Length: 277
Ligand SMILES: Nc1ncnc2c1ncn2[C@@H]1O[C@H](COP(=O)(O)OP(=O)(O)OP(=O)(O)O)[C@@H](O)[C@H]1O
Ligand SMILES: [Mg+2]
Image 1 (tube, rainbow, N blue to C red):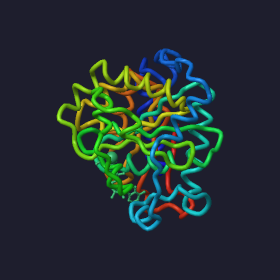
Image 2 (cartoon, protein in one colour; image 1 turned 90 degrees about the vertical axis):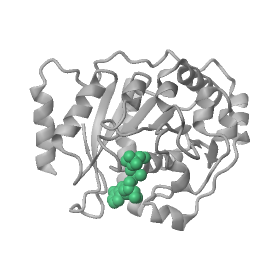
Image 3 (tube, rainbow, N blue to C red; image 1 turned 60 degrees about the vertical axis):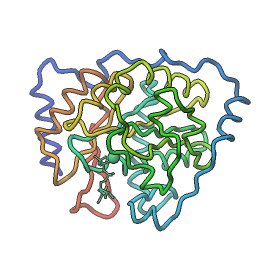
């Protein structure tokens, strides 16, 4: 753990002139909600179909944060750190990515979103932008006819795609891979769709579950649309070189909030995630 932390810090320090977190221009404010009133926002949320979670299925998929205490403690600590940084910087969009596949992005994104759902004063969106290998629907055990990709294309609405968990978390999923992920994430549709969704649902925070960085260009194509990013590293699969490369590339487009070391086998039960910033 300490070794990895030191190595990341060293690699970061060695990059003279590289963008430190906080340097790229923030896009916050560009898409400020167009002013839907509180009643309209509340109605829009109520109209989303409700999602109920099967505790056993969640446990099988390592989704622990739908109730507080016990195994959710580590996620709740992560939530607090994220919230502090987002509030301090007036950030509203957070992407979650990793160097390569299967580091735990979707697991972290969903746990974090469920942890935020227990903050009654905050509305949160979790949007699935891994359009090549979507998995949130499978993890949650849901499948909607209209994909989030269709919402980005303009052939479906958010209300037809998203599900509401409790009163203040909405989750968008994709039932299968999209035919044209790169075009969708690069095109004007995504900018328009996100602005419309934010205007209608007024989330305090939107979390994007992304593709792995070093496998496709999708995440880099989208990175300029978010205020900040968390990198999920696999404790025994991600190398320092990979993490450093991701951090450097992302820092040219957005603010790198930190690196989460996931799948740590040798940590105490209370520390599911290692987090560095
Ligand atoms: N902390 C953890 N400990 C052990 N297994 C984990 C942990 N986090 C996630 N996993 C498991 O690792 C696998 C991959 O997780 P997940 O789908 O969240 O990764 P991903 O980075 O989103 O993958 P992909 O790149 O395919 O989107 C899943 O089986 C998940 O249950
Ligand atoms: Mg995933």
